[in-house]
Length: 297
Image (cartoon, rainbow, N blue to C red):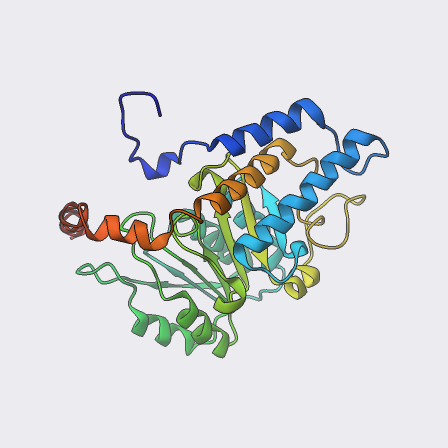
Protein backbone atom coordinates (compact mmCIF):
# COMPACT_ATOMS: atom_id res chain seq x y z
CA UNK A 1 0.00 0.00 0.00
CA UNK A 2 3.06 2.27 0.04
CA UNK A 3 2.98 2.21 -3.77
CA UNK A 4 1.59 5.25 -5.65
CA UNK A 5 -1.45 3.24 -6.76
CA UNK A 6 -5.00 2.52 -5.67
CA UNK A 7 -6.20 -1.08 -5.84
CA UNK A 8 -9.79 -1.22 -7.13
CA UNK A 9 -9.50 -4.59 -8.88
CA UNK A 10 -11.89 -6.66 -6.79
CA UNK A 11 -11.39 -9.93 -8.72
CA UNK A 12 -7.67 -9.54 -8.01
CA UNK A 13 -8.36 -9.80 -4.30
CA UNK A 14 -7.49 -7.61 -1.35
CA UNK A 15 -4.13 -6.71 0.13
CA UNK A 16 -3.29 -9.03 3.02
CA UNK A 17 -3.67 -7.71 6.56
CA UNK A 18 -0.59 -7.65 8.79
CA UNK A 19 -2.28 -9.96 11.32
CA UNK A 20 -2.82 -12.53 8.58
CA UNK A 21 0.76 -12.36 7.29
CA UNK A 22 2.12 -12.61 10.84
CA UNK A 23 -0.02 -15.68 11.52
CA UNK A 24 1.37 -17.36 8.39
CA UNK A 25 4.96 -16.54 9.30
CA UNK A 26 4.53 -17.63 12.91
CA UNK A 27 3.02 -20.93 11.85
CA UNK A 28 5.81 -21.75 9.39
CA UNK A 29 8.58 -20.80 11.79
CA UNK A 30 7.18 -22.15 15.05
CA UNK A 31 4.86 -25.12 14.49
CA UNK A 32 4.98 -26.27 10.86
CA UNK A 33 3.89 -29.92 11.12
CA UNK A 34 1.52 -32.54 9.79
CA UNK A 35 -1.80 -33.43 11.37
CA UNK A 36 -2.32 -35.57 14.48
CA UNK A 37 1.33 -36.20 15.37
CA UNK A 38 2.40 -37.06 18.89
CA UNK A 39 5.08 -34.36 18.98
CA UNK A 40 4.79 -30.80 20.25
CA UNK A 41 4.72 -28.89 16.97
CA UNK A 42 2.00 -31.16 15.59
CA UNK A 43 -0.13 -30.59 18.68
CA UNK A 44 0.40 -26.83 18.33
CA UNK A 45 -0.51 -27.04 14.65
CA UNK A 46 -3.70 -28.96 15.42
CA UNK A 47 -4.63 -26.45 18.10
CA UNK A 48 -4.33 -23.65 15.54
CA UNK A 49 -6.51 -25.58 13.07
CA UNK A 50 -9.19 -26.08 15.71
CA UNK A 51 -9.06 -22.38 16.57
CA UNK A 52 -9.40 -21.44 12.90
CA UNK A 53 -12.44 -23.69 12.46
CA UNK A 54 -14.02 -22.16 15.57
CA UNK A 55 -13.25 -18.60 14.40
CA UNK A 56 -14.78 -19.20 10.97
CA UNK A 57 -17.82 -20.77 12.62
CA UNK A 58 -18.18 -17.59 14.69
CA UNK A 59 -17.71 -15.44 11.58
CA UNK A 60 -20.60 -17.19 9.82
CA UNK A 61 -22.57 -17.93 13.02
CA UNK A 62 -22.47 -21.66 12.35
CA UNK A 63 -23.80 -23.90 15.10
CA UNK A 64 -20.52 -25.78 15.54
CA UNK A 65 -16.92 -25.71 14.30
CA UNK A 66 -17.38 -29.11 12.63
CA UNK A 67 -19.62 -27.41 10.05
CA UNK A 68 -16.62 -25.57 8.58
CA UNK A 69 -14.52 -27.10 5.80
CA UNK A 70 -11.32 -25.40 4.63
CA UNK A 71 -10.01 -25.73 1.09
CA UNK A 72 -7.86 -24.12 -1.59
CA UNK A 73 -10.57 -21.86 -3.00
CA UNK A 74 -14.31 -21.55 -3.51
CA UNK A 75 -14.17 -23.23 -6.92
CA UNK A 76 -12.37 -26.32 -5.63
CA UNK A 77 -14.65 -26.63 -2.60
CA UNK A 78 -17.75 -26.35 -4.77
CA UNK A 79 -16.50 -28.90 -7.29
CA UNK A 80 -15.61 -31.26 -4.44
CA UNK A 81 -18.93 -30.99 -2.62
CA UNK A 82 -21.01 -31.05 -5.82
CA UNK A 83 -19.50 -34.45 -6.59
CA UNK A 84 -20.75 -35.78 -3.27
CA UNK A 85 -24.20 -34.24 -3.76
CA UNK A 86 -24.37 -35.76 -7.24
CA UNK A 87 -24.57 -39.23 -5.71
CA UNK A 88 -28.03 -38.33 -4.39
CA UNK A 89 -29.40 -37.28 -7.80
CA UNK A 90 -31.27 -39.34 -10.35
CA UNK A 91 -31.77 -38.92 -14.07
CA UNK A 92 -34.44 -36.30 -14.67
CA UNK A 93 -33.87 -34.42 -11.41
CA UNK A 94 -33.61 -30.64 -11.74
CA UNK A 95 -30.93 -28.17 -10.64
CA UNK A 96 -31.50 -24.40 -10.61
CA UNK A 97 -28.70 -21.91 -11.37
CA UNK A 98 -28.71 -18.20 -12.21
CA UNK A 99 -27.21 -16.01 -14.91
CA UNK A 100 -26.14 -13.52 -12.24
CA UNK A 101 -23.66 -15.94 -10.66
CA UNK A 102 -19.92 -16.41 -10.94
CA UNK A 103 -19.15 -19.46 -13.08
CA UNK A 104 -17.72 -21.22 -10.02
CA UNK A 105 -21.33 -21.59 -8.83
CA UNK A 106 -22.56 -22.66 -12.26
CA UNK A 107 -20.09 -25.03 -13.98
CA UNK A 108 -19.92 -27.54 -11.08
CA UNK A 109 -23.69 -27.99 -11.31
CA UNK A 110 -23.61 -28.22 -15.11
CA UNK A 111 -21.03 -30.99 -14.79
CA UNK A 112 -23.20 -32.76 -12.21
CA UNK A 113 -26.22 -32.49 -14.51
CA UNK A 114 -24.25 -33.87 -17.45
CA UNK A 115 -22.96 -36.79 -15.40
CA UNK A 116 -26.27 -37.70 -13.76
CA UNK A 117 -28.67 -36.85 -16.56
CA UNK A 118 -30.27 -33.95 -14.70
CA UNK A 119 -32.06 -30.94 -16.14
CA UNK A 120 -30.68 -27.44 -15.52
CA UNK A 121 -33.04 -24.47 -15.15
CA UNK A 122 -31.57 -20.99 -15.60
CA UNK A 123 -32.88 -17.93 -13.75
CA UNK A 124 -32.42 -14.65 -15.65
CA UNK A 125 -31.99 -11.16 -14.26
CA UNK A 126 -33.55 -7.82 -15.11
CA UNK A 127 -31.08 -5.83 -17.22
CA UNK A 128 -32.55 -2.55 -15.95
CA UNK A 129 -31.68 -3.01 -12.27
CA UNK A 130 -29.58 -6.24 -12.35
CA UNK A 131 -31.85 -8.09 -9.90
CA UNK A 132 -32.83 -11.74 -10.26
CA UNK A 133 -36.24 -12.46 -11.70
CA UNK A 134 -37.85 -14.05 -8.67
CA UNK A 135 -40.98 -14.89 -10.62
CA UNK A 136 -38.84 -17.22 -12.75
CA UNK A 137 -37.29 -18.66 -9.59
CA UNK A 138 -40.73 -19.30 -8.13
CA UNK A 139 -41.85 -20.95 -11.38
CA UNK A 140 -38.77 -23.18 -11.43
CA UNK A 141 -39.48 -24.32 -7.86
CA UNK A 142 -42.89 -25.62 -8.92
CA UNK A 143 -41.00 -28.51 -10.59
CA UNK A 144 -39.42 -29.33 -7.20
CA UNK A 145 -35.70 -29.21 -8.08
CA UNK A 146 -33.20 -31.00 -5.88
CA UNK A 147 -30.58 -28.23 -5.71
CA UNK A 148 -30.71 -24.44 -6.07
CA UNK A 149 -27.44 -22.54 -6.43
CA UNK A 150 -27.23 -18.74 -6.26
CA UNK A 151 -24.98 -15.96 -5.02
CA UNK A 152 -25.25 -13.68 -2.04
CA UNK A 153 -23.85 -10.77 -4.05
CA UNK A 154 -22.91 -10.51 -7.72
CA UNK A 155 -19.21 -10.28 -8.57
CA UNK A 156 -20.08 -8.34 -11.74
CA UNK A 157 -22.65 -5.71 -10.71
CA UNK A 158 -22.80 -5.92 -6.91
CA UNK A 159 -26.47 -6.90 -6.64
CA UNK A 160 -27.29 -8.34 -3.20
CA UNK A 161 -29.82 -11.14 -3.53
CA UNK A 162 -32.62 -11.77 -0.99
CA UNK A 163 -30.95 -14.94 0.28
CA UNK A 164 -33.25 -15.62 3.21
CA UNK A 165 -36.38 -15.25 1.09
CA UNK A 166 -34.98 -17.41 -1.71
CA UNK A 167 -33.86 -20.04 0.79
CA UNK A 168 -37.33 -20.21 2.33
CA UNK A 169 -38.86 -20.56 -1.12
CA UNK A 170 -36.40 -23.32 -2.09
CA UNK A 171 -36.89 -25.26 1.13
CA UNK A 172 -40.65 -25.08 0.75
CA UNK A 173 -40.16 -26.85 -2.59
CA UNK A 174 -37.85 -29.44 -1.03
CA UNK A 175 -34.61 -28.16 -2.61
CA UNK A 176 -31.17 -27.80 -1.06
CA UNK A 177 -29.60 -24.33 -1.12
CA UNK A 178 -25.96 -23.67 -2.06
CA UNK A 179 -24.85 -20.03 -1.69
CA UNK A 180 -21.72 -18.35 -3.07
CA UNK A 181 -20.92 -15.62 -0.53
CA UNK A 182 -17.44 -14.76 -1.84
CA UNK A 183 -18.40 -11.22 -2.82
CA UNK A 184 -20.65 -10.50 0.15
CA UNK A 185 -18.47 -11.76 3.03
CA UNK A 186 -16.10 -8.73 3.01
CA UNK A 187 -18.96 -6.25 3.23
CA UNK A 188 -21.60 -7.47 5.64
CA UNK A 189 -22.34 -9.92 8.45
CA UNK A 190 -23.40 -13.45 7.52
CA UNK A 191 -25.64 -15.53 9.78
CA UNK A 192 -26.09 -18.96 8.24
CA UNK A 193 -28.52 -20.01 10.95
CA UNK A 194 -30.76 -17.03 10.37
CA UNK A 195 -30.54 -17.40 6.60
CA UNK A 196 -31.30 -21.10 6.85
CA UNK A 197 -28.95 -22.03 3.98
CA UNK A 198 -27.69 -25.59 3.60
CA UNK A 199 -24.25 -24.69 2.24
CA UNK A 200 -22.37 -21.39 1.95
CA UNK A 201 -18.83 -20.71 0.78
CA UNK A 202 -16.48 -17.71 0.92
CA UNK A 203 -12.83 -16.88 0.15
CA UNK A 204 -10.38 -15.28 2.57
CA UNK A 205 -8.40 -13.44 -0.10
CA UNK A 206 -11.47 -11.25 -0.54
CA UNK A 207 -11.28 -10.09 3.10
CA UNK A 208 -7.57 -9.39 3.67
CA UNK A 209 -6.42 -13.01 4.02
CA UNK A 210 -4.45 -15.52 1.92
CA UNK A 211 -5.64 -17.58 -1.02
CA UNK A 212 -7.79 -20.02 0.94
CA UNK A 213 -11.51 -20.63 1.31
CA UNK A 214 -14.06 -22.02 3.74
CA UNK A 215 -17.33 -23.83 3.22
CA UNK A 216 -20.18 -24.02 5.72
CA UNK A 217 -22.53 -26.98 5.59
CA UNK A 218 -25.29 -28.07 7.97
CA UNK A 219 -23.76 -30.83 10.02
CA UNK A 220 -26.43 -33.45 9.40
CA UNK A 221 -26.04 -32.93 5.65
CA UNK A 222 -22.24 -33.12 5.74
CA UNK A 223 -22.41 -36.17 7.96
CA UNK A 224 -24.77 -37.96 5.57
CA UNK A 225 -22.86 -37.24 2.36
CA UNK A 226 -20.39 -39.70 0.85
CA UNK A 227 -16.98 -38.02 0.73
CA UNK A 228 -14.35 -38.74 -1.91
CA UNK A 229 -11.38 -39.43 0.34
CA UNK A 230 -8.61 -41.88 1.12
CA UNK A 231 -9.41 -44.73 3.53
CA UNK A 232 -7.34 -43.51 6.53
CA UNK A 233 -9.06 -40.11 6.46
CA UNK A 234 -11.71 -39.36 9.11
CA UNK A 235 -15.27 -40.51 8.52
CA UNK A 236 -16.82 -37.45 10.17
CA UNK A 237 -16.94 -33.81 9.05
CA UNK A 238 -15.02 -31.70 8.54
CA UNK A 239 -12.08 -34.13 8.22
CA UNK A 240 -13.69 -36.38 5.64
CA UNK A 241 -13.91 -33.45 3.21
CA UNK A 242 -10.53 -31.87 3.99
CA UNK A 243 -8.60 -34.27 1.81
CA UNK A 244 -4.91 -34.96 2.32
CA UNK A 245 -2.57 -32.58 4.09
CA UNK A 246 -4.19 -29.17 4.24
CA UNK A 247 -2.61 -25.78 3.58
CA UNK A 248 -2.01 -25.23 7.29
CA UNK A 249 -0.16 -21.94 6.90
CA UNK A 250 -2.99 -20.67 4.70
CA UNK A 251 -5.56 -21.61 7.33
CA UNK A 252 -3.41 -19.82 9.91
CA UNK A 253 -3.60 -16.79 7.63
CA UNK A 254 -7.39 -17.07 7.49
CA UNK A 255 -7.43 -17.04 11.29
CA UNK A 256 -5.32 -13.88 11.24
CA UNK A 257 -7.67 -12.25 8.74
CA UNK A 258 -10.66 -13.04 10.96
CA UNK A 259 -8.81 -11.53 13.93
CA UNK A 260 -8.21 -8.43 11.82
CA UNK A 261 -11.90 -8.23 10.90
CA UNK A 262 -12.83 -8.56 14.56
CA UNK A 263 -10.59 -5.58 15.33
CA UNK A 264 -11.82 -3.63 12.30
CA UNK A 265 -15.46 -4.22 13.21
CA UNK A 266 -14.99 -2.21 16.38
CA UNK A 267 -14.19 0.93 14.40
CA UNK A 268 -15.54 0.47 10.86
CA UNK A 269 -18.58 -1.49 9.76
CA UNK A 270 -21.14 -1.97 7.04
CA UNK A 271 -22.87 1.32 7.86
CA UNK A 272 -19.71 3.34 7.21
CA UNK A 273 -19.03 1.45 4.00
CA UNK A 274 -22.59 2.03 2.83
CA UNK A 275 -22.17 5.71 3.57
CA UNK A 276 -19.12 5.87 1.33
CA UNK A 277 -21.01 4.15 -1.48
CA UNK A 278 -24.05 6.38 -1.21
CA UNK A 279 -21.89 9.48 -0.97
CA UNK A 280 -18.90 10.20 -3.15
CA UNK A 281 -19.07 7.05 -5.26
CA UNK A 282 -22.82 6.98 -5.92
CA UNK A 283 -22.63 8.82 -9.22
CA UNK A 284 -19.76 6.73 -10.52
CA UNK A 285 -21.52 3.52 -9.49
CA UNK A 286 -24.63 4.48 -11.46
CA UNK A 287 -22.50 5.33 -14.49
CA UNK A 288 -20.83 1.91 -14.34
CA UNK A 289 -24.16 0.11 -13.96
CA UNK A 290 -25.60 1.95 -16.99
CA UNK A 291 -22.52 1.11 -19.05
CA UNK A 292 -22.68 -2.57 -18.08
CA UNK A 293 -26.41 -2.70 -18.82
CA UNK A 294 -25.81 -1.23 -22.28
CA UNK A 295 -23.07 -3.81 -22.92
CA UNK A 296 -25.33 -6.68 -21.82
CA UNK A 297 -27.98 -5.51 -24.24
